[in-house]
Length: 432
Image 1 (spheres, rainbow, N blue to C red):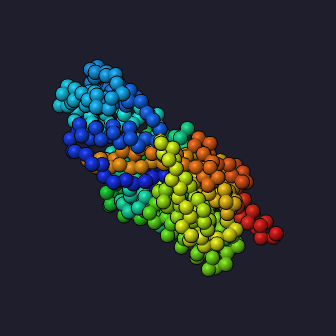
Image 2: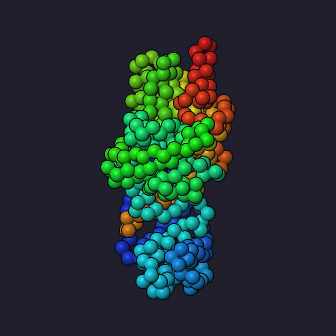
Image 3: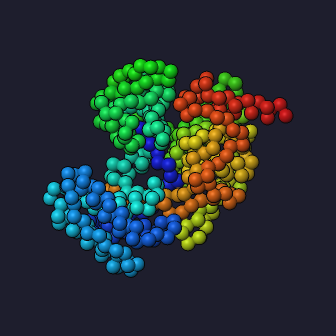
């Protein structure tokens, strides 16, 4: 993940919501959107209670000691339930709008509705968050320092990898360094989005990271000047031992062209084999996953999505296979969503061999619905299955060859046992 981390989602960008700009109109549209498009049926009572809970939490954070927010019961009638949602918001705005903000109260109400579903991928994105997501999917062109960062969901430790030639690399940040703080803000209690927001900033300004290197007991302070950063989604090289190594960071708008170009470069140099590295790749665009999978799969189903009504939509290969064989795909526990679509399709067709550890297990697809405030709703609208019908949600994909490795081992370093295993496998294939 780069300065702006890619969400763990196979994302489909939809058209702008047709809603009025009023707070009530935005709330109405959000309610209808989630009721009509969420990938499984939901209870309106959940949305009502979620709205109230988030409004209470929001007001507590703004020093309202005992906020009085009415509690309404759902009836199952859309018009009545919508009226209840709007009454709760209107009451909060009337009582507390002067000490807070009507816009922020509306955003809190929507956020609460979506959070009530217990789905970490269905959420309200603020204008800053949706801009960051769109930048990451377009390839990224912004003011930053040029790093990929990954946060362990359990320990909350943040590991960094600088991009060659960027300010972070020039300042001495090393692959595998653990970030302890950004401009004096400790990161162990922060969400990844908040850390990225601290790192990014106006071009020409400075940010100070405190980092600790692998095997070191001492931390060090690294001041870095922000520059205009373009983040490619692919790092590629033909290795000294004759393999085409292609590391894909995310599935963005430029990813297919970048992967195809890298694979064809290797083909022109008559490489001994191909390695597509999807470790730490949290996903991205569904269409990019289909296109990239089609580089290795000549024809047939790549992925099928299934909506709440049980309707299945099949995405098929684009007939642009380039004959990149033999192929190894590297995976780990942070290989997720769109990455799993590609890994699952290649495994089902036996078009390549998966090496590494079990993948994340995200088998659902999100759609983005922009809102009138410049933010967006990100809603889980379907689940997906592999060509052989495997549902990988919460299960992940078991690689063909398991090679355990700590995620703290820098990818591509001499200590990278999974990459070494990929090369060893390809050498054995060549001897047959």
